[in-house]
Length: 230
Image (cartoon, rainbow, N blue to C red; front, side, top):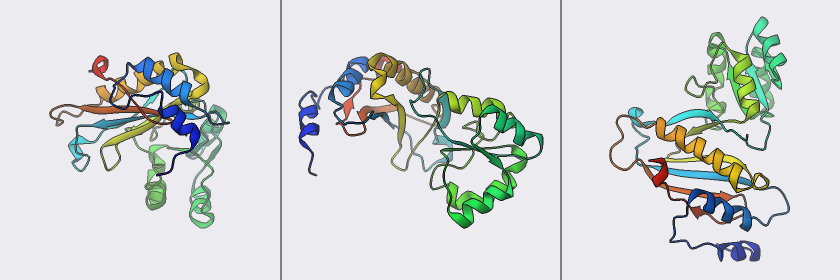
């Protein structure tokens, strides 16, 4: 794969065989970020589980202490008083069947997170085939199926992120922007890894965190030593 000159310059700062202390790793990511925009920093955690088994799923959500640097657009499925409550809490959109039809007929996806009250899940279930593949389906585990729409919306706006395994047993999650600096990014990373460690399934055997890498949008990955988290 061809890599640009800036990427190659950044890669020279990193020893690919070394697992760096978390803060040192993030200092390298910040130093190596060379794009003209404020790059997002992502954490990639490979776990020693098998996501094909229901008892080895790892999924949840956590509020990052310094937010993500991006304000998520929240859509809430609710009815009656809960609609007003959702909008008052800061939801960008709130509705019922009208929004289901807008999504299905217009292929409308101007939102980042979907919240639903439990009594609306029968309606939202019709969107499973379109929301599911995009990772947007509300889930009780992620706190996005809840009667308390005010708390759900406020937490998401404050920097709540959802983490879940992909098919290769890796969690990919944003932990902030390059402009945050290494210290704030470390605080966010500590919080996220702490939540993933707490979510360890009882059925998981052997080494739980296999590897951990941080990278900015356009930059090379930096391996992180995970001993302090285990």
